Amino acid sequence: MSAVAASAAIPVSRARRRKRIRGSSIAILVFLTMCAAFVSLPLYVVIVTSFKTMEQIALGEVFALPTEWTIEPWRMAWSEVCAGMTCEGVSHGFWVSMKILFPSLLLSIGISAVTGYALALWKIRWAGTFLFVLFLCAFVPFQIIMIPLVLLISSLGIFGTIWAVAIVHSILAMPLLTLIFRNFYKDVPEEIINAAIMDCGSFWRIFFEIILPMSANIMIVVLILMITTVWNDYLIGLIFGGVGTQPMTVILANTVITSFGVVKYNVDMAAALLTAIPPLIVYFALGKFFVQGITAGAIKG
Image (cartoon, rainbow, N blue to C red):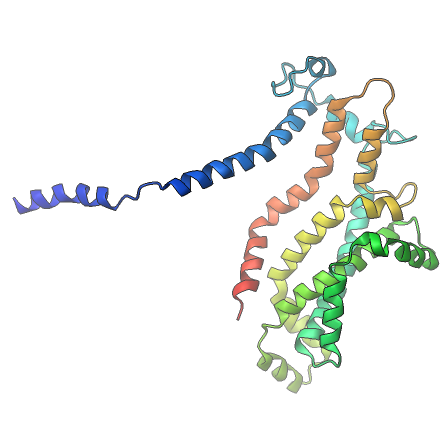
């Protein structure tokens, strides 16, 4: 009889443990749903429109699904759409953006990692003043230093080339990246560096053999930040890129602005999606590592 009573009491105790949904939780859920809808609806329209024919778009049913799905706008956006006087599609800008991306990553991340390592783990004179100047430079608007950068790049004789765009990206990213690396390396135990120095470890040997293998988490964080920044940039590519060296975003803008006859909205939407896909792939592939890198930097030490 006691066993029956105990079994009957279990559902009652479980029911008492259930927490009621509070009004604040419902309000937060509604707010987040509204934010998601605010972002998702325009994206939905862009995706749906890119698969419609111009006849379906002319009906004005923006939110309706295509009655006849077609990938012709995507093909035209990639290889045939006109940007100014050329009709090579956004594919040309894609390869130019790739050529800009890799030297930008190598220069900015390489120099910033070494500088942050030196400021964090080696006793350097005027390190505090240098960090203060870096902190100020990280928040200087690009428009203020745009003309001096144009004069500097022109004096080097590389204005209008891929290297000009890559170097400007690296210059603008170095203050913030250096601060990120410096704060991450600051938590490396000092005993490790002292032991390495006693074992005749030089500056570069310690960096490549000890510090760099410990930097996987922060490297992924910085890598995602730089890829999204460089790939989505428009202003730097427009100013410092020349004819044939303009990135994908500039080609996209020229495609939308340039039109002959009827404006092909489906092709424009497909071109916009093609431009956005590469950084999205990088984020979805490395997103969990991004969170792990930030968490590791927050609780390190």
